[in-house]
Length: 182
Image 1: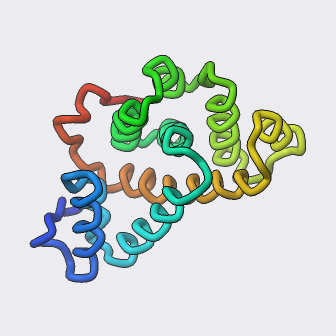
Image 2 (image 1 turned 90 degrees about the vertical axis):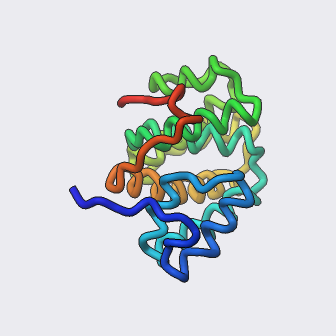
């Protein structure tokens, strides 16, 4: 398995530095997965651009974290599961909901459940959803535009989930309590 340097702003390729600086401002630190992604300025730039779109959608931050956590579990990316568990809890998602997703179950909250099921089904069925599956999402109070926004979140998380599985960066101390094994 190849190894990838966990870059700092100083050591990163020049074209990756703005992405790492942006993450430093947003999180107060550079997540190790992003530091590994920065080995490829193309991937780092795409990662930053798509996540900017994700976080400016009509979905709430809680809803976005539900989708990101579901995607991480569905794609079996241990780093992203720990990271998005921490972010979901920080955004006010209950541990009952995050524990359900981490166990590959649907959350109890009906909107979170609809989001999680849609995200998981999109990945598993590669976007080929039935009218019934889409209808269940819409019946939870979401819009047809939000179906497409969830696709954007799934696309963004695919970047980090695949990169995380290949680069296998170490989990930061603050996320150790959320370590997960698929």
